[in-house]
Structures are given as C-alpha cells and as structure tokens.
Image (cartoon, rainbow, N blue to C red; front, side, top):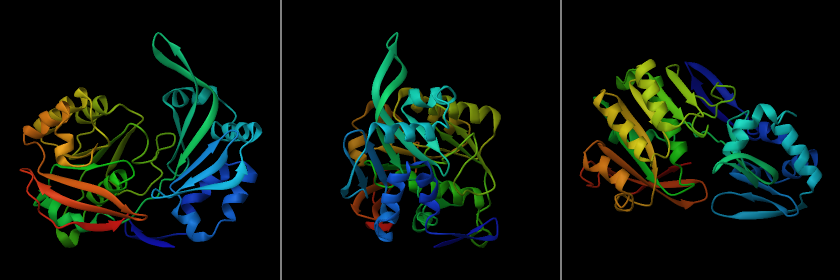
Length: 326
C-alpha cells in the first residue's frame, strides 16, 4: 500500500493498482498465472514478455524467470484484440511505431514482420512478441536530489544512465515535484511542459496522463522531442521542459532554443558516465556550451535500487554515491 498527498488530498494506492490494468488486458490463462505468483514477485515485475511458441518471461531488471506456460497463437490473438480494443485501424499509428500505451501508463512493445513503404515503416504485421513494461511511479524517489538541483531556482539538469537504471522514474518524480511546489521550502509551483515521445513519462492514454503529477503539468504525448519542445515554447509558455532520451541533432538545437528562451530543462540521456556521452558529437556540443548546471549519473546495482552521483557543470563531484528506491 502506498499513501501520497495529491493537491492536499490523501490518496491511498492499493498493491494491485499498478498491475490491475495490465492483468485486465491479458488472456485469462496468463492473468491467472501471474495472479498466482507470490505477492513480492508480482510487485517486483518490470517487464512481461509474451512470445508465440515460447514460455512467458517476467523480468525484475536484475533477473528473469520463465513461467511454465507456452504462449499459443490464440493467446497472442486475444492479447492483440484486447490491446487494440478490437480495432487495429484506430491503433495503426501506434502499432507502426512499435508500441501501444495502455491504461495505467504501461507500454507494450511489439515485434513481428515489418512492412516498408519507400524505406519507411508502414506497418508491423504477424506480431509474434509483446513486451509489457510496467509503469511504476515511485513517489518521492527524487527527494534526496533536491538540495543539489535547486538553488533559488531549478538548475538545468541532465540525467545520465544505462537502460533500466531509473532515468524515467526519476524524471517523472522531478516533474511532479516541480509542478507541485513546496511552500515549506519556498519553492513555488511552476508550469512544467513534458514532451513524451514514447508515452513513458506521463503514460498518457487519449492525451490524458495516467500517472500522478502536480496541477501545473502540460503533456505533448507521442510527439518527437525536437518538435515538441518548440511547440511548447511557442504555445504553452512553460517554466520547465521535461524530455526523455535526447540524442539527435534536432534535439540539441531545440535544447539550445529553450535555454535561450530562459526555460529550465530536465532531460535524460542514455550512457554510463559523463565521459561516455561526451564521445557523442551531438551531446558533446551542448555540454561544452555549459548549458547544464548538474549531471545526475545513475547506475543500476540492486533489484529495487538505483545508485547515483551528482556532478556540477565542470564535472566536479558534488555528492558521494547514494542510493534511492526505484
């Protein structure tokens, strides 16, 4: 059970809240198999992989388990119908991108036969693999970072880490706290614009965020980061822009535009260290412009923890290595 305060109202989330929407989309046999797992194992699931003709795989990030059930073509067909609500046409754009976001903010990646049109992906058909990534919001997981990331105002921050190190989870909690503010710490609630290209940060369904944020959040869902940042600047006047996994040259250009417009940034980048991402010309360019005041370096160590260190704009270490709940 998790208790949070949302806009001053006490909200209690039951243990199954995160998984309930996922279980409701699964074929009955698979849902029953998962419900029969020990509660600790069910709670720790980060990914459920369903492949035709192969055992179901559950992953906790640091380990995986193959369950004693082989997925049939019929099971996969039932799952696809549930995910698309029996209308493949209405989900055509999402399917073409290789994933579907479902209620609760969970993302379902797909793999199968790709149909090309002029070198671009037109569709994915004969879907044979599904990867359900469980969106588990960790309220308060960023609290210990605030003294390093706030000094009279929020500091431009880049979060660096390998896959499944907690980058998006941390970014989500930062966005929540910035948009809520904190009267006790004299941090006013700011307007936060989220560019959610893969529907992972806010987990929007039909444009509505499924996860908990403060009252001053605006989300551009399924929008490319570069275009989305510019759209927010022009139309929503954000104080802070939040974006996940920048990397393209267009992203870097939009980052510079946001900085020149006086907007604060909270973004993530794939990598193992500051030295690692400095090898990438696009990222290296904006770092050498002294755009970012803080770098949070994440590394996955244990099943439910992330480890982090914080560097200033020169790369000097500001914190000892610390850990927090993912």
